[in-house]
Image (cartoon, rainbow, N blue to C red; front, side):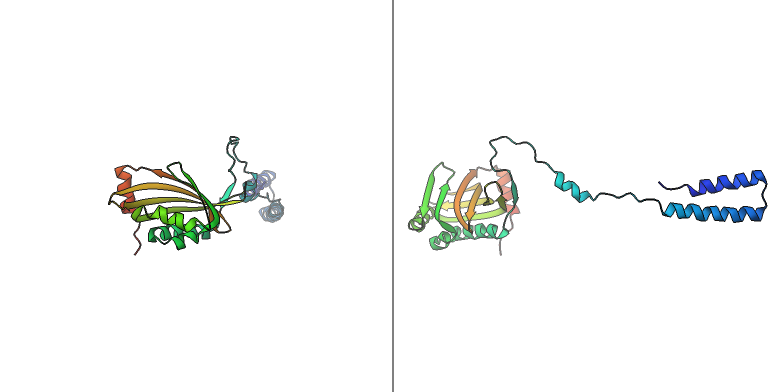
Length: 215
């Protein structure tokens, strides 16, 4: 606690005036008292402030339902997001060999229509060619790629939001907002869960105009 030096100084001076000490003696005594008080004040203990950073260690996760089996997440390897971006480019380029290079020896696909398909290194290129051959052209534009690592199961995921536009062989054009959840192991895709969302005209217009076009 700081010592109120000026208040004590004024009080002592009043006392000296009351007892009618000589002016010179008053000044000398007041100087001595001031020196002593300042020395005492400078030696007063300083309160230690605990760094705010320590409070981060006290954060406790909210109680979640038992159904939430994937809850402990952290930022993942950003290189994996680049892998998924390259995979979309390979799909749009319609080169099955390039697409297959991003997949593991065994990969499972859960498609938006409820169909599950599994591929292996013997069947993957033929399967990819069959899927891609449905379209005359496609444009998959990922505008959000989030690389995450799940500590509960030691898994690496990339969550992709993609503006997908295509034209079928018979000339029909359409578009969907796609959310793809990619599971990778050792840098290769082992699982995909994909969902499609039909967008409003306003959102479609925003996605068509707001997403930067590559030069």
